[in-house]
Image (cartoon, rainbow, N blue to C red; front, side):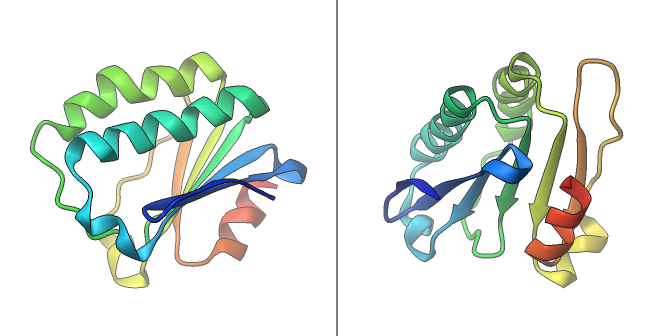
Length: 128
């Protein structure tokens, strides 16, 4: 069920998985970094609204160049919202070639597990 859609990204809620699904659309490469941060904040806001416990992020179309300060913002501003919501698992969907370079995170107390997949089906199986 779509809950938000614009030219940059779309959000849906997967009730059987208690998951918010975020997908970058083809036109997002024209975004600014501020637009990107707003998109990230918007999607986690819907996570709070729907009380999501899992997140699916489809980056197969992702083409934006993020600045060097992005990991700091992600760690200090974005991930704490995941922790506050109680997110248990995060699944990234990415091109097969990107998997070998992608980091994964083990679940620790109060934090989430993160895994990377090349298909939505494999990600949903892990979340299930």
